Amino acid sequence: MLQILRQIRAVARLEPFDTSTAEGRSQERYRRIVFTTASAIAVRAVGVAVGLVTVPLLLGYLGKEGYGLWTAITTVVSWATLFDFGLSNGLLNLISRAHGREDAEEATRLFSTAFLALSALAIPLALATAVALPWVPWASLLGARGAMDEGTVRAGVAVALGAFIVSLPLGTVSQLYSGYQKTYLTNAFALLGSVFTLGAIALAIHLKAPLPLLVLAVSATGLLPPLLALGYARKALPWIRVRARHASRAALRALTERSVPIFLYQVGALAVNETQVLILARRSGLATVTDYSVATRLYLVIVSVIQLGTSSFVPPFREARERGDHAWALRAFRHLQAVRLGLALAGGAALVLLGNPLLKFWLHRGDMAFSWVVWGAYAALLLAVVWITVYVEFLWIMDRLWPLVGFVVLNGISTVGITWALAPSQGVLGAVVASGAFNILVLTWVLPLIARPLLVPDGQAH
Image (cartoon, rainbow, N blue to C red; front, side, top):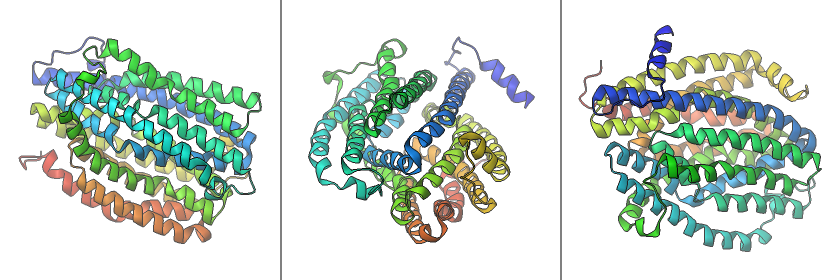
C-alpha cells in the first residue's frame, strides 16, 4: 500500500510528463489515471450522498408504488438509449486510436461526424415518439394501473423520452474526453450536475409537483454536465470543432462498422440489466420492483466504487497498444485486476454482514430487509461482475466486439428466462440469481481465454 501511495505521489502533478519516451508516456498515463480516479471518487461520493438523500425523499413523497413507477419510467428511457445505434460508444475506440496516432484531424472528423449524425437522427426519433405516445397503454405496460392514472403516466414517460432525445448527440461529448484521457474534466461537470439534481428534486417536492414535473426537473439538470463539457472543449481540446465540413463518409463508415456490434451488445445488456424491472412489475408487482430497486441500488454503489478506475484505464490500454507499449498495458491490466478483486471481496462481505443495517440507516424505515441468502447472492454476483468487467472493457477498447455481442445476447436470454420463471415465487432473490447464472457459469472463464492473446501478444507472460 505504501508503495502504491508513493507511486501515486510521484505522478500526481499538474505539469504533464514528456511523452517522447516510453517512460514518459507511462508516467503521463498514470498521471491522468490518478486525476480521473480522484475526480471519479469525488463524483461517486457526491452521487452516493445525493442518492442517500433523494431515495428516501422520493420514496416518502411518491410512496412505494409511485417510486416503483419512477423506476419503471427510468427503465423505459434506458431502452430508448438504443436509438443512438451504438455511435457514441463506438466513438471512444476511434478517438483513443486517433490519440495514439497523434492524428488531431482524424479526431475532429470523427467527433463532428458522430455529433451531427446523432443530431440528425434525433429529428425523426422525436416525430416517431410524438406519434406513438398516445397509442401505447403506458399504465398497463409499466404495471401502474390503479396506482396512477393513464394521463399522468403518459406525461411522465413523454417528459423522460423528450429529455433523452435532446441529449442524444450530447452522448458523444464524454466519449471525446475519455478518448483523450481527460475524463477528470467531465467528472467535474458531473459533480456540478449532481448538486443541481438534488436541488431540483428538493424544490419539486417542496412545491408538491406531480410526477411529470418531477421527471422534468431531474431530466433538465441531467443535460447540464454534457452541455458545459461541450462548451469547455474549446479550451481543453481546441482543435475539436463541430462543423459540417469536417464530417466525412469515411468517418461515418468507421463509426458504423463499430456501431452495429455495439448496438447489438447494448440490446443484450439492456435485456440483462433493465428487462428484469419490467418482468418483476408484471409478475410480482410494483412493491417487489421497489424492493429490488433499492437493494440493487446499494449493490450498484459498491460496484461503482470498485470500478471507479475503469474509465481511467480503458482508453490508455488502446493508446499504449497503438504506440507499441505492450508491456505497460499488461502491467496496468494486472494491477487493475488485483485491486478490484480485493475491493470486491471486501464489498461482498459488507453486503452479507451489513446489508440490512445499511438499508435501515439509509431509508429510515424498517420494512425493507432481506435474508442472508439474498445478500449472499448479491455478493457472488459482485465478484463475478468485477472479474468479468475487466476483460469486457479491455476487449471492447481493442475492437473485439463480436464475441461480446454473442455472449451478452446469451446472457440476456438466460437472465430474462430465469427471471420470468423465478419472479413469482422468489421475487428479489430470483432476479439476482437470474443475473448471475450465465456470468458465473460461463463468462468468468471464457473471457480470460479470449483476452489472453491480446494481453500477451508474444505468448511470454511474466
